Length: 266
Image (cartoon, rainbow, N blue to C red; front, side, top):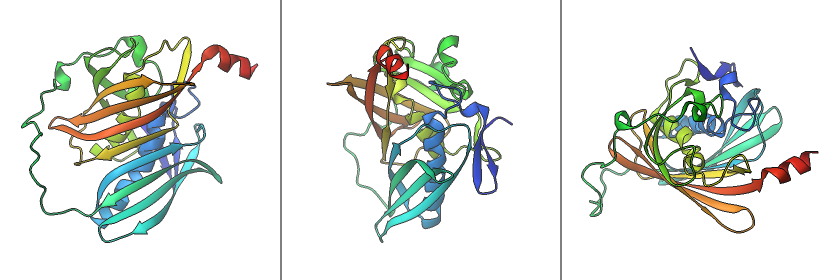
C-alpha cells in the first residue's frame, strides 16, 4: 500500500512519496502539516471539542527522515482549548501547529447569507491537469486533481478539487480533516501568479479557520494570490466539500527570483 509515512514505534518515517516540488529529498508542505494535524484531530476527538483554527509555522526544510510529534496544552478551558504540536527531527524542531479547539454547542443560529446548496461543479465534472503538472512533486503524483476553473500551469486564480489517494500514515484511513489540511497547502500553487522558471515562492506559514467540519474525501480549493512589496504576497482560499464551504485559508507568501537564489548558492 502506498503511504506518505510509515509508523516505526513512536516515529513516522517519510517515504519516497513524501517528496516536494523543490527537491525530491525534501518533504512536501502538505505532508508536514497533515502529520501535525493528525495529532490535533486525535486530541480534539478525545476532548469532544471542535477544531476551529490551525496555524502552522514551517521553520526548516524537512528531509526524508523519521519524525516524532511533541504535544503541549497551552490552555485547557471549558469553552476553548489551545494545543501546540511540534514536529521533531531528533532534537531539531521542523515546525509547529498551534490549534484552537472550542466546545460544541447544541445548535447554531440561521445564516441569512448561506446558499441552500453548493453551486460548484462536482469533481466528476472537472478536468485533470496536464501530465507534466501532475509530476511537479512525488507527493503530488499521489493526489487526484480535477480543475473546474483556471489552470495549474498558468498564472491566475483557479479552483480545483483535490484528494490524497495514498494513506498519509500507513494502515490508517485519511480523514476529511487530513484531506482538508493537505489540500490547503496547495492553495498558493493553485493560485500561482508567476512563471516558476523565473521565480520561486514559498509559504513559511499557513492558517485554516473552520466554521464546520469537512465531509468526504474530495476538497475544493478556490484560491487567489496577491503580490505586494519586497517579495511579499498573500494567498487566500476557500475550502469546500460537496455540501459547500467549510473553511478559509490564508498563506503569507515570499517570492524570490531564481537568479538570486542561484547566485547565493554559488
